[in-house]
Image (cartoon, rainbow, N blue to C red; front, side, top):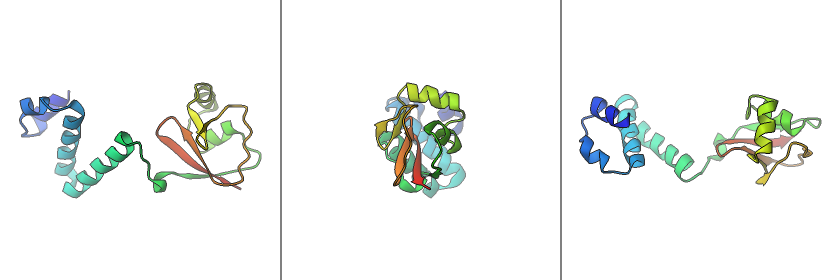
Length: 134
């Protein structure tokens, strides 16, 4: 599909692009199309952001939302109320699979949630929330 986009939407030499690593070709295509619609600066910013987040696994502290934990809330409630997961069932599934980390350590469903200082809650590899005590 990507090669069809190259043929239809760019003037790039497709056989030359096919010699590149597919990831690099995809990044270049995204940059070309973003440049066309949003300008060169926006395209470079988007590419840098993509590479930081997905290639280097970095996340900007400004991009992490904060959530104030109430004293009576359980981890399941915090996961759903913060918007990191859509339901408690999904939260239970992710916890049982070890996909939830609290302060860098795997969390469990029965784990007590006593927040005395700011701590990072992570779901999967790309969803984060900064938990704050009430």
